[in-house]
Length: 163
Length: 151
Image 1 (cartoon, rainbow over the protein chains, first blue to last red):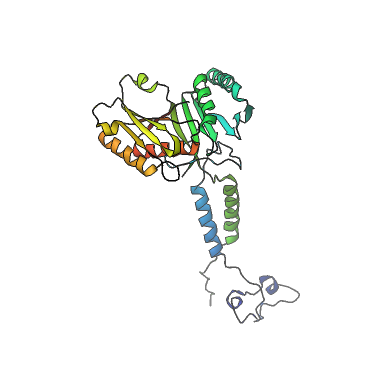
Image 2 (cartoon, each protein chain N blue to C red):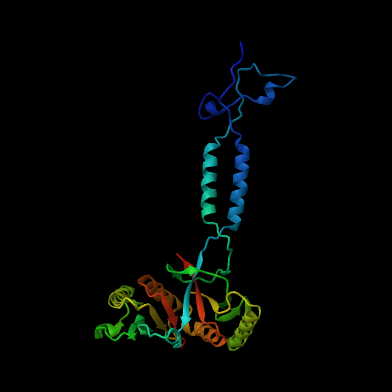
């Protein structure tokens, strides 16, 4: 069996059996069926994987949690998303930092958030990140745009999928 | 006779494999597969030109029904009438005719190199994806200062 195929080149003598005190087989010409796995190709594949993952590595972490039902619009000219106050629109409901808020209390809650940001001297206290599904109508987003404007958030960052 | 030392040494690959496996596992766990960016816009409630003092040319872009998009130039007096106002009808499938829009924006940018501001006025039924698509194409054409108007 060893004489044929891949095993012919990769079969090795067992080092343990050659030093055995009971029945040493160091002089035995017969090869044992111990196949040495060719590791070079495995290491090549692992190295390529590591390099690919290192290139794609981002230390900024996930800023947004995107649920399974939400598809963000695509954009090629997007900018790097930085952490700011997040307003999420999901299934017609509004969330400020994952906390559900009714549409008529959106302004009030955003004003509170703005006050808190100003008091704590936060780095970015004038921008609002909007996360919404790409099929949402503007009348739904308009509430957020208006509320942000009333609360003093001058810049709106629409979350998109960067291509 | 002295036995010759074997120069054909072997590297112990097991430690390499262990190290690479650990690295792959940790990188796979921390990898970000979906890259999220942002499309930054300002509130277009008449603040942009006032805050700068000098009136820069701007283009108002209004959404209509069936993919219709209309352009109206502001503070750009020395431009041909055909460029001052333009209505681009939607495509056959009632979506925005993005090729025609891009052509017109390119023409505007050629005639008015200072034009960097676009203020978008969507309708209540405008789909969010269309607004982002328009913004993306405007940014590509060099209109970097974008604004969106509330209803």
